[in-house]
Length: 289
Image 1 (cartoon, rainbow, N blue to C red):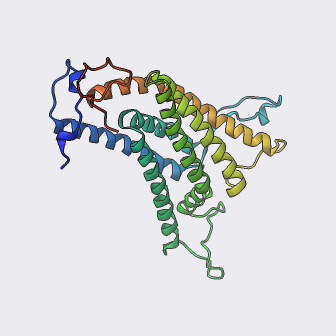
Image 2: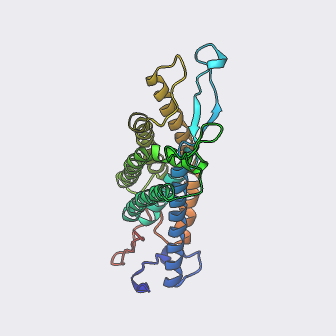
Image 3: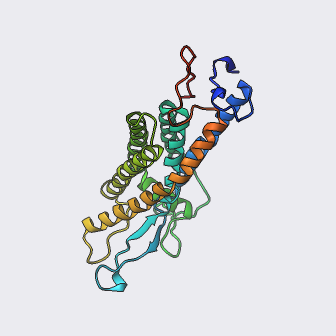
């Protein structure tokens, strides 16, 4: 059991709210952290498995004058859909709990990715009930020339794992660093700037890394259609994926503002913007991080 006497309550800042015991404040803070960390890690595991199993076409634009071969401008991998939520979670944790906890969560997410990959490898390495060719010992393909569903998912997940790992670490640490850079530079003001600034930069790092590594290291991206160069094909993938992530990042500004405000009060933390200076001689209470 923690020493609740060492937990700063900051309750003098919230005279309009009921007074809570140190134990209640501790449980609230740890509970909210677990919810944010759970969303982050659960989403990360899901997108790592789904990955590039399917590309979703949101809409098409005709750049070539031929609707039949119109360049797909807004097509994103299904694994990209929940990805912006991971950056919102790390922004909340950075804001409410500090840089150390958000950085720790990034490392835990990295270990989780390794664990998911190990389970996928072990699941395929162990004997199963699939039919095998007596001559070669290989699994018999179905009528469509495909492996069983598990092996197809496994192949695609492994195909993007190196890109996912490198891009994930680079993007998440950039997100945490840029968030706190803007927080320090603006003296804890302009919440929208550190939220959007950190996410937009980190999403670009993530998008460029994962597309280029997936193509040149794993060769796991769909090939370009006839008549389209590889460079243009990759730029379209990067541009459409980043546009989706950037729009999602801008849209999460409102829930981040509302959430940061209410969670700060709920957890009895120092307000996210500068509060009036305490009276001379008074002890200054710090937040959780």
